Length: 427
Ligand code: HEM
Image 1: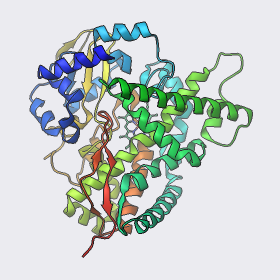
Image 2: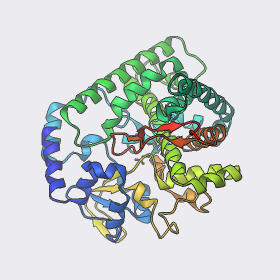
Image 3: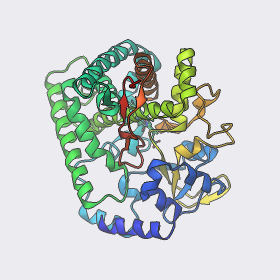
């Protein structure tokens, strides 16, 4: 890991654009000017160990192409460090984004894993959860009012009291894991979220490993319980699909599928709610428009996803010698698709830097990726975002920021760790 860090630092000092993207803290707060600087490099901005694109058509082509496969964290480590990692052996506890998680494997394994859980995420199944999600939002808003009263009377952290709790509660109920565990999941998930990023310090890496181990252990034990006493929930259903003679899914395949759905269910939508609140604070005229025309809320959620996406970028590796937008890519070549950059491509979105809740083609954003790995939870996330944000702004029409907010220390996941708000501004 030390080698990898040193390699990336050298790249940053040398002014390499993709390395800066990986490590520069300035990029965390506002990467968009950087994307505009490199927009003229079409189709890719050249990089030292990856080519990177901020273009909508190029990103879509890469994400949909059979010539490209998914990457996993160890496969994006530069040469010498990869060798060191290989010597250390595979990690003991695969994270939700390492094989055998569906996010990190290609066909034929990918459709096999995805099919296990996909039925639970159709538009119809999600619509049936809307009422319960609204009830959860209402309960959390009551709790948040109480927390404010117990504090200074009006200031609370929106992330701790609302944005983080709503998605974890909904996904826990869907999966049938105890909601009493939600604070523990959030803590473990927070510690493990950095597993998406490169260039971690040794301490951060050790902490990530500890958190991943705790998540794996808990889920392995939980699935064993369900095998003995199945319930009427999604996880009992997938556990029922293994057979004892070992020809079905392995225990680790089941644990990874369950952990991915759990973690994807709460690590991203929290950012949608936080980023959405921050954008509505920053654009009061858009907020007024939503108050006057509440039917715009679903579109507003897509505009938030376009303008300030919870997952900033993803990557694919060429499986064969191939070509994208006229540029040759050798087998093994890495292509970083910057979803947040593609979402501001002026060839797809008019005035892409303008936040417009009524934008006609907001849905064309790539915040949920594209191709075979298109977000399984997209409909659920949209529904949760809409219910959560609308309930919040309708309950508190005078909601206001109470400080700048703190960004999460993660790079691929883009959102707030804390966002202090004032429920009723003092007059
Ligand atoms: C995949 C974004 C919420 C479950 C993805 C990918 C993105 C994404 C970008 C694909 C990554 C790639 O192509 O490399 C988001 C955003 C969300 C969100 C922005 C919230 C606003 C959810 C929720 C769930 C979920 C609520 C479910 C419970 C998944 C799963 C995959 C995935 C299982 C893997 C799909 C596959 O590999 O086939 N998500 N997600 N996501 N997401 Fe989401």
